[in-house]
Length: 133
Image (cartoon, rainbow, N blue to C red; front, side):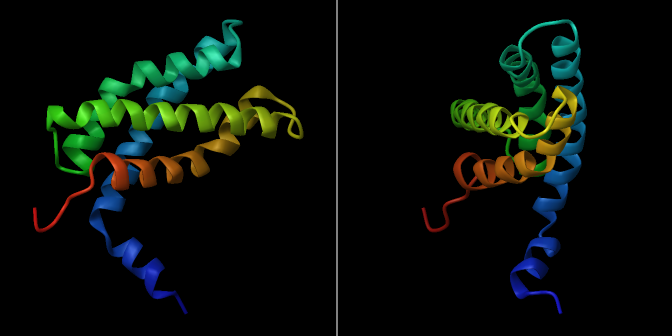
């Protein structure tokens, strides 16, 4: 039996659009990130470059496609949200890399948990709607 909360989450089209946009965004940012890392730069810098390179692209896919809101007023919160996601991703990578060998494998293992965390940040902090205002 599937719990009601899980059913509601799966029925939410916004979540599904976020997954599609996230897949495209992940491929883009992950590709940039890995290319920079394999070029010999430190992991923190490769993650930063991947994050910065993806912010504008991701704002269009998240804002325009997933959340249906391209308001420029959301951009500062979007950047702040991505900063939080970046800091958590770097910390998670450092912890995971202590027990899992391989830089790329650590990145791959973090994709799903960081996507979930990113959705929470974007849906509750950046693109939330306030009813009754």
